[in-house]
Image (cartoon, rainbow, N blue to C red; front, top):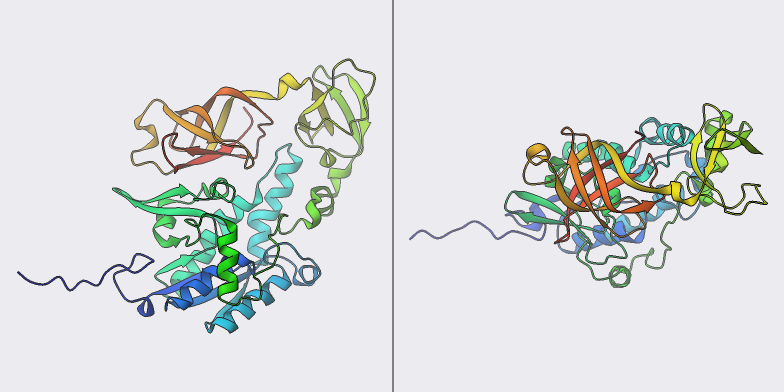
Length: 380
């Protein structure tokens, strides 16, 4: 009987030695991606670090706490130097502006609540950067995201992170099966963020104690209004706050200063029941308010669906699933009814408040940690 001389799979799933496996690591300069790069370098992989410069470098130098800024490029470069692998900085400013920032501004003005981090993963990191990794003859690309890639009967599957508090599945639902074949997420199995920081200390990384970024990278201090006012000055045009019948209740100083579900700061007093922002109409410069009951949503229309199931989306009339309609909320029971391969309607079994066009609706298996993709919420 002949001996099987096929080498065992390495930790990245390839039947060859780590030294013969090239991996591009997307390095933001934060502790997570730095640990991934250091871990793979220590295991003997042929590591190449790549950092994207996504927006104005001059402004970035003075801004801490967001990825892809000037200080973060420096931190990523230093980690690469300390661990002894090459590091490259790629200027993606124009791509990022066209693919992420402009849509963010336009959708916000259209009354939506955009999630630019998803678009960045979808249109920049997992598209252009992934192609760059292939151009560098890398076998795969690794990131510091907290999500798991597991091999199933039909190929690679996307699963939630072991640490539910760090899970980033909401922001990665649009990862395609082809991308998933090429991507690796070495941190997804770790029990907690403390384990990541412990690894950073083990490797002696200068970023071991670096705070996590909280803001969208191009929105300093979470001030959406200031950024969009700069990009789209017309967003600051004053207008009326009206009820659902069109009655004028007050004036506002720009729809950009309001969000769906907002209650405070409307300047409307003397009412028996509080009013909430239920719709934004940028074309008419109107902020529409109504009772809290109007915020409850049962039916959610979706488009641009990315389906990660084993059988085609249209193979069933309806799918019992769990969904997240906001990143900060746990999955809730729902029924997914496909309309086409890329459009569907989701019925929430319990109505949810604050469901807004522009956000994502992500699909989960109610019985396991698997993610079945998701779609973008839009107006009926």
